[in-house]
Length: 111
Image 1 (cartoon, rainbow, N blue to C red):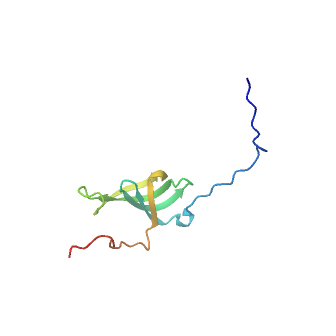
Image 2 (cartoon, rainbow, N blue to C red):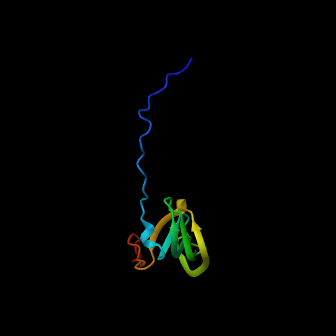
Image 3 (cartoon, rainbow, N blue to C red):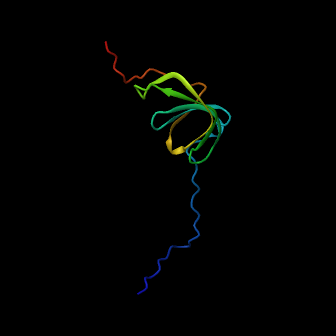
């Protein structure tokens, strides 16, 4: 027994083009800082990217975390050079210039 074919309309409907949420083109050849799932942080010069937020960083430096507390960074750095970062693990991207660390307003002081 054959099943009736379903009419799918004209079949030539164009799907709307998906655009990337991030416009990283203004950061090409500029220093950026990237945080990844798992807590790693790196900074480097953005050389390229794609719609999946895969990044190519040159002169990349990894900021070493404290072995006792994975959320604390030490003053140690590790030179990585040219790096390709997988977009699915990127959590945060920010420009390196104009960035400053602030105190966490949610930590209760021990007074």
